[in-house]
Length: 276
Image (cartoon, rainbow, N blue to C red):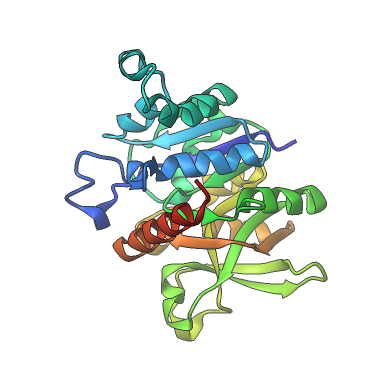
């Protein structure tokens, strides 16, 4: 069963400086809820109640957010603001949460490897909270979990990206299957547009099997001098099945200011359209 989910939250968030000098980028709010909470809610919806965070220096606010604050709770008790915390309190009670630190920021692959003690020998989800994925019917992790239950292998979420932007994504070369997914033949980290094998870019949602840790231990630094999860998956694809899943829903790159503003406007519009 898929019960665990790993959140990679060790990065510096340099694209949002100076706002992220003292505040984790994962705590940036979309309306009145931080990005990281959207991701945890998505994981819980998919049945993943054992949550692991790979954090770094200066990320204590994430731990504080998913913890009790008795003074605040007592201060707002009986007021109109009490309801604002109820959904978060319910989420915390639903989950088991553990933390570890990424001592050096050496890439997504290194971050996943840091989470090995938290995930153990079970398949697990992975979320990069920078990617805000929204679907009112079924979250992206739920969609990936369904594909995992069918194929029992690593599953990556993909979407069509413009050719000129392939150098911002891990790109797959895959063979389309009858159910709309792709059997992955190879993966390339941030290729130049002229060398990209497709326009199917990986976004920040994965289901991984424990063997990925063995592959990551053997993976040498790649693009940017970092240990890339894409490179480890590419090595694994030579011997085992990996499936890429185009997902239903909308995704915002909230690691960029433009994407963050688009996500905020979209969520505000949704809220305004809801009946009182």
